[in-house]
Length: 250
Image (cartoon, rainbow, N blue to C red; front, side, top):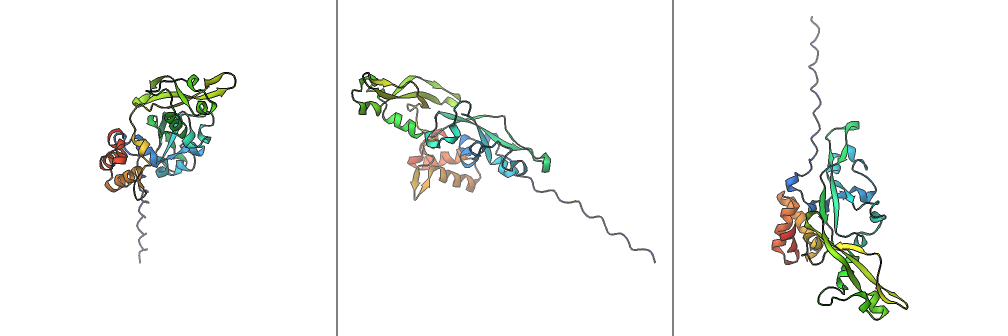
């Protein structure tokens, strides 16, 4: 009797499903970063936190590359609402090479995005107490009491324009010096120029109805219709008055 035939060869193992690629550049905007992880806030870079072996986590991450500790020491240790400068941040997406094991790498994309920041508490206080805003047009020296002096801020110099058309402006607090009166503080902080229109990021966390925010509604619409956050935010801005800046600045 002939020996039995050998079993057929096993089929090759199937390849794992590809990871979700990052959104195309045409669909990506600064608003997309609002639902992603900033690895610099964690004290990491793109390849940290296991992202070399997790493409999806890699594509959901980015790195803030300006400001940085060299330019603004303690920046990432300062609560967001008090950070300075408060004009824009430079962000770069994390991208995965699609390989597995030791060859997997999550690295920082070369493209840089210049994104506006929501107004900080420091800048909001300066805007509200700006004694140089017309029609006042006054200087610190016009404040004659310690109380009014130390509640005042003044603009220092002319505004400047950064990438993306954002304008910055320097503010300095007024300080009271015994025997000298009210003086302009030597060191100031940078804010977005309040003379520009409000931007979508300024109303991103504003409540529209029943606890829902402009940003939350934009996220829901983007996921439901598989569109970019910029397009979703523009539609939400056209629908709800409180979100209106998103209709023209997203």
